[in-house]
Image (cartoon, rainbow, N blue to C red; front, side, top):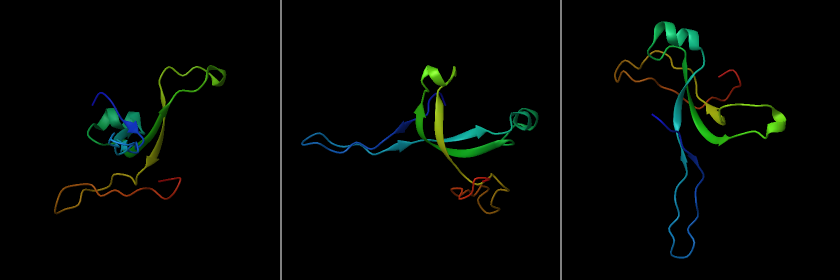
Length: 95
């Protein structure tokens, strides 16, 4: 994927139709060494991107945009019947 969207909903105005919000999901490399060594989904965590932003120069130089994300629970063992990972929105700082 070459892009991630974080777009708030737009209310309709007169004849102009509104648009729903679009907050993409992403797999974030939380442990790059594990991800590079094992491949697959090792070292990755699921997150939903809510805002993409840049800081003013007075806060330092960051070459890449920053993102506010909502973490999900870690990817565990796949569910046996579907082979899919079950995740939930994290309710703790430690995920």
